[in-house]
Image (cartoon, rainbow, N blue to C red; front, top):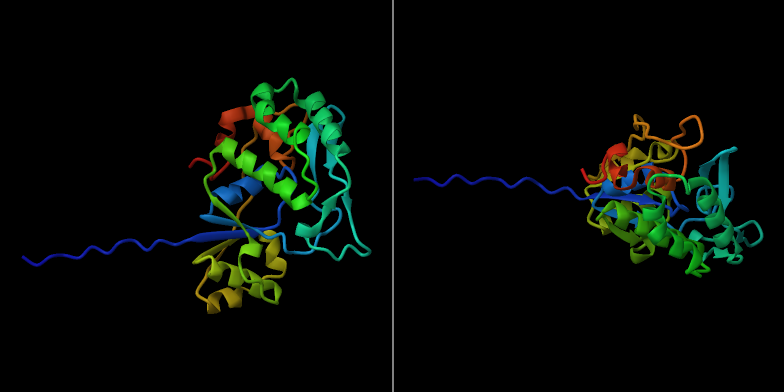
Length: 242
């Protein structure tokens, strides 16, 4: 009898590459959950008035920015990984604002048990290290098991798209998942030339959940979702625990 060889399905390693953000919104964590390896791209230049060191929460008075004060050099020509935090005062003011606005949330105590030490018992002075500490802790709570690495772990080349392509290749990626805003600058042909599939992540169509303080808003820190929904947060995301 002739044996029939069964072809095993080809395993496609998916990669996402993005800068670290401070307590990012739910879409950031959905992107992490959708890939096999998530590369923190903090070798990029620090940008002011961006998501690197700030995010928003909901309050009785509306949306409120929580901003980590950082030191910038001249025209801030410095990498995110080189950016230092000015002092620790922000930790107490941010936690105070979180308590004031989420103490009434259904899962406040559950989330505060592991979140409060990140504010009150930590003293990292580097922005990137601080961001990643929050990101890893949130991933742990949501049971996101994606491998998180750093762009500094791999060779960095010149050229905006070239860097992304080479990072994918160095990590053994066959598919690159990118946020839609990158369509403004990514050269898709470079991915085709290297046989790496380029996929655009879709942040639309998120369902609403029970949220404090008035009209529903999607574009806030994921802390809002966690405080209000706890372990049920994955039901309002597309890739977490799917």
